[in-house]
Amino acid sequence: MYRNLGNAESTIRGDQAALKVFNYFLVNRKTYPKYDDLEMEHVEGEMLKVILGDCATFLANTPIPKYCNDDLQPTTNNPGYLLFTSIVSCFSKAKTLLKEKFPMHEDFQQESEVTWWPALYNACEKATEQAQFS
Image (cartoon, rainbow, N blue to C red; front, side, top):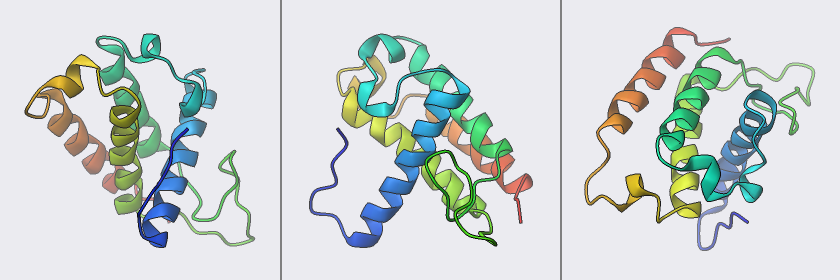
């Protein structure tokens, strides 16, 4: 279970929102289990990169209401949508969540960042900004 110990309230809220979006992606877009139920077999080898790549595509192409339930449905009459900076933050948090849950994954064992992460992050950032929903 994901825990936020010792963080500021605003950080906790942001982390919870990112987890909600990541769980929706896992369960509804790729038929994976929720984050808490993911196992190493789901992220072994190249699957970590595949999951994060698919997540980036999902985030760049899905309007996400600022105020929504676990199914990403608006909970207010005029919710507005997350800005691309918030969406990219959700993407970065998805990687952090996976690193916290699977610290022994080969891509997280390297001293430096894996070579594919910066390119994937930049692609997500660019695509999300271009697709900005209002």
